[in-house]
Length: 260
Image: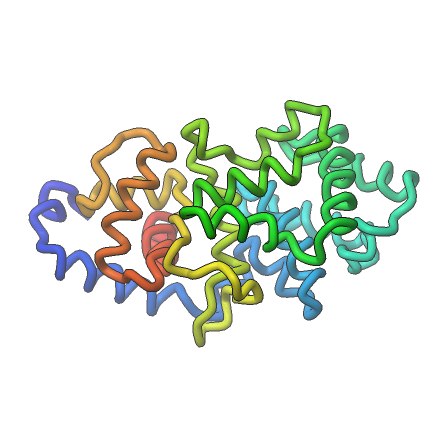
């Protein structure tokens, strides 16, 4: 792609490029080499939710490394992630906590485990904590309410950085990706769509370096930083192309960026 030429494209041409890319990447073959393959190992909603949340938290860096570490976690959990977070003994958690990933430390793993156990003692699905915020606004409000609820009794400030905070201008890529997995539903079978109380139309793009760079080359994004302000700017453009399902373009932007 040559950015000088691309920036002269009409909106309809840009949408055509992205729609063609969606057809290329939004199908089941996408799953195998993506972190979403981990929750696809399961069939029960709460197992999908827990596995999806945990792998989303470490979804930065090399995708193969992410998947391998998540598979290690699932093995320690006996391939029953929901049962593990609600019933595991301290010694089982200690075993899991040794399987760190990049900046996610043993302390972080134990703290996230404590937060998950408390969450499921209060609600039957993490959706409910997101839903309260989404009913007041969009992704910023949804993620902010979830973070407040999830970390309400947490005393480790460092752990909270693993769930991006859009109220502090974080792009919150990983948590927006988790929301895409849980909320989006179409015939491709990639995203799960098991959360039915949050509209797809309110989701925000899981912005990262790949999707951000392609969005800029296409003239959809002017802001240079990959932060929450950039997410808002890009969301406006994507909602114009597909008001009901704007984050379907995550497949196109990310897919083009990774597979040049």
